[in-house]
Amino acid sequence: MTQNGLGTPSAGNSTNSRTAAVIIAVLALALIAVVATAGVLAWRLLAQDASGDPAPPAGGTSESTQAAAPPKSVAPAPVPAGAWKKVTSPKDKMAYDVPPDWEPTPGGLAGFESPAGEITALMHGIASYGDDWCDDNWHTLVGFVTPGSISDKGTIEATATHWAKAAAQDDGGSSPTGSLGEPRSVTVNGGRTEATAVTATTTPATQTCPVPAIEVTVVAVPKDSGYALFVVVADRGAEGSNPDAALEKVIASVRPAG
Image 1 (cartoon, one colour):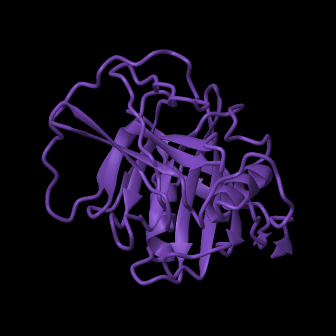
Image 2: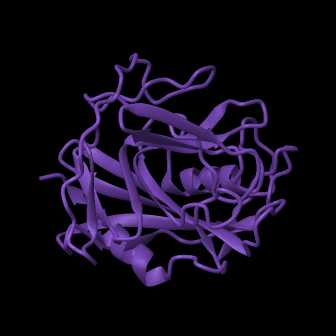
């Protein structure tokens, strides 16, 4: 592993050892936004309309500026016990699978805010794991990032570094240190597509919950119209953290939606 400069301050990165990130939930036609103020993978969820275009957050930067209509309540299809769940992103025309104990929120957005409340990293078509394991936090967040948005820094190495800093920075603006791995080939889409992945590893600057490290893996998946960016943010070494094999299986499942 090589040092990646995670300790270099940059404007607009997130707060609280994975604090000030965001999560949404839509329940029985009611929109519930939960904003965490401290902890480890804490996120605010934002609303998304039925067309799949995200609504812009109040006072922040969104991947879309289109106004959102009230979300529609759709009953999920029954899932057999133990079956993995399919998550589809209409915006990317891509899909992936997650284990049965994960929580898909394909119509939601999640990411991280700066101490000033500006969104600096945002993903859509999301799923999370480990709801409320410690102080209203989650172990893992996965989803797609729009190429060319504020959440994409031009290369997968720069994007992984950006997300790792956003996830581990505290609300005083202190930047964490960490390392960046070499880009590697991974197979997705049932072994039919070769993608490129890179992982940034960092230690939270401050910790409400005991997390030895955070890993951010960014995967660039080629498709007919360019590529899709799939991002995995996961704590490592904490009680209940996802095993590597589970995260690798999620990544390997990324494929064109069909």
